Every structure is written in structure tokens, then in C-alpha cells.
Image 1: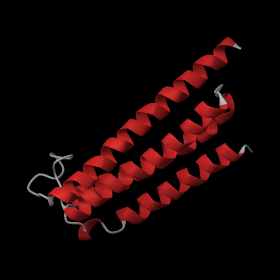
Image 2 (image 1 turned 45 degrees about the horizontal axis):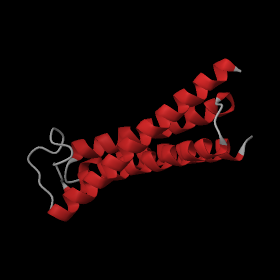
Image 3 (image 1 turned 90 degrees about the horizontal axis):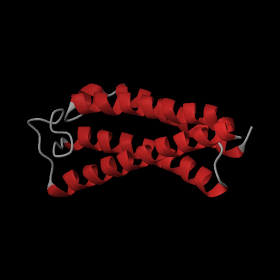
Image 4 (image 1 turned 135 degrees about the horizontal axis):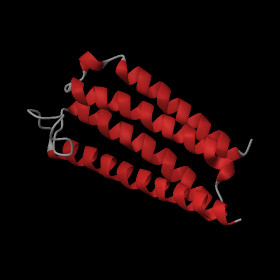
Length: 141
């Protein structure tokens, strides 16, 4: 098994475990609905990371693009979970207005959550583009 593939599998499964543990404490968050989002989001991001690991041998990418794919996938998964988790703990709502309705965090908390969620979104979009490019190149060979 390729080292990058093993790394993707490991981080994906760790994120699934983090998601399961996050779900065990839903009633103790300031915003339980955001806690549920963190729980589901971590499991979904972990599953995406494992799926990309399973696709790894089918991707045709330069070493630089492959490295970017691994780290954008892993970092975005953790950033998305952390953003939702801290939104649930702090009770922020600027970045998640529907789920955080009725709650407001401090400006620092709101900014921290926003940075995590934006970074996670950018990372997962970049990862999806890299996977599509890697799969598209594979058809031509």
C-alpha cells in the first residue's frame, strides 16, 4: 500500500472516530444542532478521505499535485469538523445562521469559527478538483 494511501485511510478513520465521539456529547454543547452537524460532518469528511484513499491508485497526478491532494483533503476534513465543533461549543452563528440562530459568540469566537469553516470549504473544493483532474488524466493513458 502506498504511504499516501495509508495516510488517507488513517486520517479518514480517525476523523470518523472523532465524529462518533462528538456525537456522544450532543446535549452538552451550547448549540446541540451544531454539535449534530459537527458529528455528521466529521463522519462524512472521514468517509470522503477514505474514499479518496480507495481511489488513490486510479489517480494520475504529479508528485506535487498528489501531495496537495493528500494535505488539502486531510486538513479540510479536520478544519470542517473543528469549525462546526467550536461553533457548537461557543454558540456562534455568523457562519452558520440557520443552525446557530438565537446564539452569538464573541467577535473572536465568531472569527475563529469562520476561518476554520472557510479554510475547510476551500480545501475540500480543491481536493475534489484534484481528484477529478487525476481521474480525467487516467482516461487518456
